[in-house]
Image (cartoon, rainbow, N blue to C red):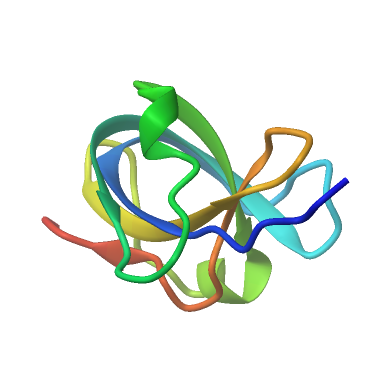
Length: 98
């Protein structure tokens, strides 16, 4: 299997959020996706899927002390794995409206 480096900027409304998940060192959030944007020079494997909802794994370090809460619009840079899981790039979680 060929592994393709892929990252996509995703904006959406935070639905749920947990500092725990089924993956070590990652929390989990669910998003209602509003927009996806390709990053220049990097494969975008998420936009073609036209997702409107997503479960995203976020590094726990990014969630420590965070003030994110349901209803906020957030942006993250996401990677999709061969198994279809979405992982946020470390340090990419950003609240757009508080």
